[in-house]
Image (cartoon, rainbow, N blue to C red):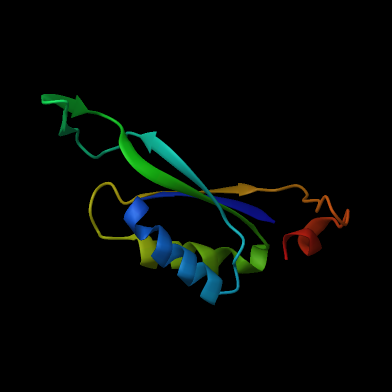
Length: 113
């Protein structure tokens, strides 16, 4: 099993979610996040004063998937979230030792289906 964490632009969330659902990967967790990367700062007006903002607003998508679905998941995120510009985000992949569905106590790949 693998855990995929993708940090993407909020405007791309719906496209990624629809793409994952089409590929049979409907289970995701979405967390609003702020961070900085290679993208430059930007300015915003707040109560009439201009402020330089360092942290960009993004969303983090988390999927725990079977090894067979890894490439499908990564490809959907790359195709749906990419704009070929700095600031599109990143994808991180981790190994998962085990998964347990609390309601049924099922373990392993059966717990993530």
